[in-house]
Length: 276
Image (cartoon, rainbow, N blue to C red):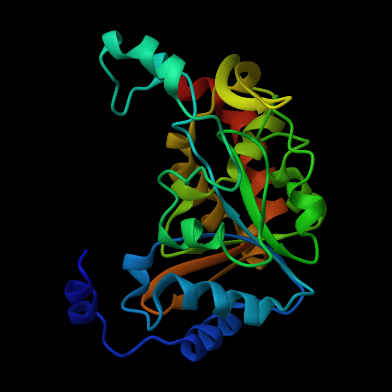
């Protein structure tokens, strides 16, 4: 979407103060820990763009809260596994030899959107060290969330997602749906239904670039929209889910623990049905 398109589709100017108002009305509060997934095009034309969205979130949370965003870089991975799109087999050896290693400071996000890419470079933000599943965080629990992110099981029980879970954090889907809800991968892990696989990425070890192998799970985020629909309908979960409008974007604020636990339970009960 071009800026002109955004202006034409926006009813009134969206500013930091209007975003702060909308976030508070949705239920975001001072001191919360929240992982945010966003779509700038759904919010509408924002005065100041992604910077304004981030500053509005920080204003509501205050430094006593914690703001987290995914900073994934799935392209820092084995080119033989790439499917969307794949590369010619004749290129793969050259990619192995030349791909830059993951660097928390320099490696850009992939497919995370403009807000997440801007956030990772913001003052006071720290990024975790996983080559494909990193997260960026700012605020009170920043170091607890991003430090010690292991290579193995990068979205599991030692990951930043697990730290948010332990902190009783929230998930804010700002203009996006459950298909973008990374926390549901932790629910997949808790279901004990996933297949273990091996991945590899280039990293810096002892000052040298090296390809390293690590254990991961065979995730299935294509299920998340259906699970999310069930979560929204479940009467027992209504107190853990709030709906509203941020700018012009339909948005959801939910308990991260609730959606993780719901996902795990849902998969345990219905796993076989996914393959019929």
